[in-house]
Length: 83
Image (cartoon, rainbow, N blue to C red; front, side, top):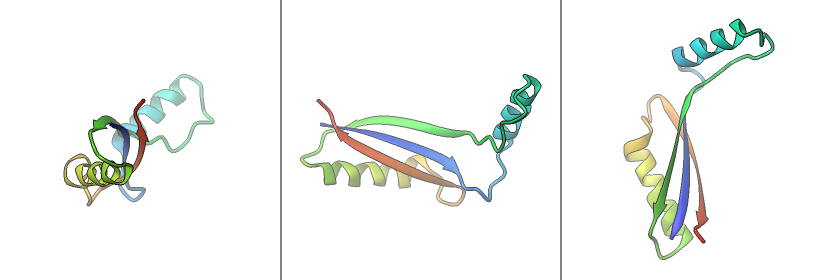
C-alpha cells in the first residue's frame, strides 16, 4: 500500500482571482510584505499497488485524467510506502 500526495496549482500565466483576494485580505491585516499569493488543491490518496513505480503511474494517470486541467494547471506528486 502506498500513500500519494498531489499538489495541483494554476500555471503562472493564469490569473488567480482567489489568490488575489487572499493577498488583499492578508494586506488588510497589515502583512504588506506578502506577495504573489496563489491558491491550489492538495489531494491525498492511498494506492494498493505491487510496487512504488506502479503506485506512481496510477497516481500520475489519476492526476492527468481527473484532478488537474492540463490547459490551466500543473501538478506534482509524491508517493511513499504506507507503514
